[in-house]
Image (cartoon, rainbow, N blue to C red):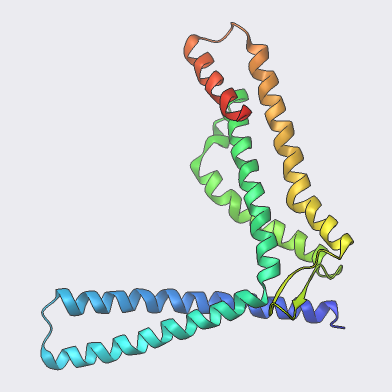
Length: 212
């Protein structure tokens, strides 16, 4: 049985390797595209073309090799990555609901209507969610290696691990989203005829979207 410390070390090493390989793949891809563009759209001397082609072969090999390593890294942490991304999907729905709440019920609060806030917010959320999920899944052995499929994924037979992950991934965001939309609906109905025609039309549109 692999202990929790070994699992954490393996996840950290795989994540670090994935980051470096992704960076190498991105850089080699950019350089390779620039070389091809330079080769076809600029007038390059015949002797220089050989040098350019040799450089392109190097970067193409790096691109293919790093892509293969990325595939291996992803397969080794696929279970954790899939759960984290699923959690981020629901958090994005929650962010959308929160923005609608601010825009409708607290429109005077300008600091919560900044574009920068909603760009930075997912980054903060994914850090927090990753920490929470790893602190739950690793001790409960929620993600294990599947020998028949050759990658790691959540085991549905592990009831404590699945329930704990479900609370973080689905139940928590769903409860918050439900509370926000209920509050928005009550707020719109309580306004009555106080609002101007333009604001009522906008709120009617928002209510229609919320119902859908």
